[in-house]
Each structure stands twice: as C-alpha cells, then as structure tokens.
Image (cartoon, rainbow, N blue to C red; front, side, top):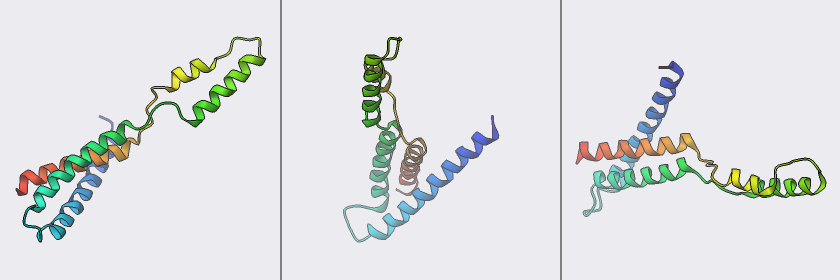
Length: 125
C-alpha cells in the first residue's frame, strides 16, 4: 500500500477522533443538568446525525448549475454559427446531469466522527 494513502487515512482518522472527543466533552459539559438525557445518549444522536450529514456532503450536489447553462448557451450559439460538427446543448446537459460535486474530505471526516461518537456511546453507556 502506498505510504501517502496511509498518511492521509491516518490524518483523516486522527482529525475525526479529535472532533469526536471535543463533541463528547461538550456533551459532558452541557448534558449532566438534564435528567432525561445522558451525555452518551447525546453522543449517539450526534453520531447518527453526523454520519447522515457526512454522507450527504460526501455525495454532494450534482446536476446542472449556472456554469452548465452558460456552456449550453455557448454550445448552442456555436452550433448555430458553425458548419462543423460541434457538441450541442443536449450533450452538455447529458454530461453534467449526474456529475457529483461533493466535498470528499469533509464528508469522510464527518462520517468517521459519527462512527467514533457511536463507539464512544457503546464504550461509556
């Protein structure tokens, strides 16, 4: 395995663990006054929410944006002017419609943070 990949995985895991630890200590600070929720229960709920939000951020927003529309208008104008075979607006929309544009590292950090919080829930419950 490439050492660069291992370093990146270790860096993501360590950042996620630090964020999870900060979340857990904040739970300990804020939730002991409430009798109906323990800090570990709050960590479990936060872990589930962080995993779901991390998945959404990891997938990202794909589809047609303002730049795709501008490119389609330019392709349409080029097709109208040129006699050569050029890409039309339908081809540009087809290419851009399922192109995911997520934030990979942020999504992975949030997912791993959620996993660490759920592990802390089972460890401290």
